[in-house]
Amino acid sequence: MTPVDVLIVGAGFAGIGMGIQLARRGRESFVIIEQADDVGGTWRDNRYPGVSCDIPSHLYSFSFRPNPGWSRVFAEGREIHAYLRECVREEGLEDHLRLNCALSQAQWSDNDARWLVRTTRGDFSAASLVIATGRLSEPKLPPIKNLDGFGGRWWHSARWNAKVSLVGKRVGLVGTGASSIQILPRLATEASEVVVFQRSAPYILPRGDRRYSREEMERFAADPRTVTALRDELFAEAERNIGARQRRHPDIDLLRQRATDHLTTSVSDEGLRRLLTPDYEIGCKRILFSDDYYAALQSGHVRLEPTPLTRIADGSGDGRGSRMAVAANGNSYELDVLVLATGFNSTRPSIAGHIRGRRSRLLADEWSNGMAAHASTTVHGFPNMYVLDGPNAALGHNSAIYMIETQVGYVLGALDHLAASRADALDVTAEAVHSYMRDIDDMARDTVWVQGGCTSWYRDERTGRVTLLWPDSAVSFRERLATFVPASYEHLHRHSGGDGALGFET
Ligand code: NAP
Image (cartoon, rainbow, N blue to C red; front, side):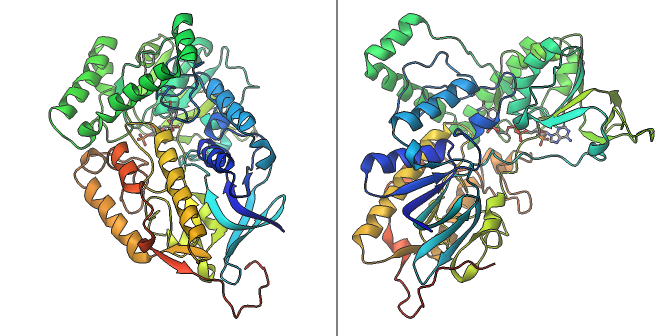
């Protein structure tokens, strides 16, 4: 059993950001366990053609590690992945990393006031546990009947099969979210036919991507203040969009008009335009950014199927399966490859089934009505545990990295308080969690996410509550988490009467 002060689960943006701050202050021992063989989280996993970020890179990067070398406004996935690997190397995190190391079970021990963490590479005993497994790590497969009976090849967008050439193939692209609209333009240059299965039409705004010129990059490198100034400008510009999400006028009307204008100028055919017009309010689902999706859709060999893919037809019994993909309206298409750009299991993370808090309560049971936390970070009954990028910590209008940095600051505040207090552990009170969730419900009530007439992964699919998104501005999140308030926490002391034995409840 290896003892550490802090055990971080996951080496994506959140885990790396937490690790950097712990390493820089040098007070706590820590490890970062990562189930894959590399760091980078979603930027390691998503390797589909065209993968890039739709938040400008100078904003979608750590404020404490600016990168004057971003090659374009919206960097491609592999450049972001390289940035994260560089962060790990240059901040000395490699010695703290345990790759190919998956969490099997984490159990809180009241006797020891520590987390006992069983992994595929040995056991750890940690004073604090930071869950940084992200919300875009578990591919979601829609209920397509007889998918296993598909006679061609199929894969999820986050598990791209680069070994299969798509040149000359008939490809079905399922979904029209952020991933799909990046995939289509590249896919369309290779495949002989593409069918896009659309369950709901997205709102799309122009993206305005471009390479940075050599002069610009030299200026960024020579004067760090220019990078900070650009970052501040991008942040302020994104932040202004919260007004539309709160259904303020004229903000929401102007935003809707921009998307409608983009559609009108990009698609001349009235029938196609109708199919591409969303039937819900703008911002209810994530707004997408693209300058080439509509053009790709209008290529002669690309077809928009305006209903979801529901099933694969039965095979002929020769064991080779069927290549006929059938849409909800009965249209069927003969296809060689199916790409499921159908999103992620975000609101019910599976790791919650592997974490047991006080009295061995499973986190999944604590969250049976949907994710809930105080300060979007701490869960009652799970002392010294911090969830980054989990409940009510996502944004629909600004950079996720800003939110992660805010939470990392909150965790450092908690660690400082714990070290200064005589307590061994901090357990957020049930009342603090309830009160925070009431505030979330109040903030969300009149927003487009609740009133916009759509379903989205920002809300829990069973309860409809906004459990994933922080339903207000990024600045208000930082203000809310700026101070660690000890009164929201029960201060726990090691059980004196316990036998001190470390053990797992199975
Ligand atoms: P997503 O936004 O959840 O989109 C999944 C899509 O699949 C939706 O359009 C959904 O339709 C559709 N779908 C599900 N089942 C279907 C079926 N049977 N037939 C047809 N369509 C079906 O997933 P994603 O595109 O992978 O994006 C997930 C998140 O990742 C994004 O919201 C974003 O936060 C992040 N992302 C970011 C970037 C970036 O540039 N920053 C790029 C990619 C992804 P409904 O809309 O009707 O549910």
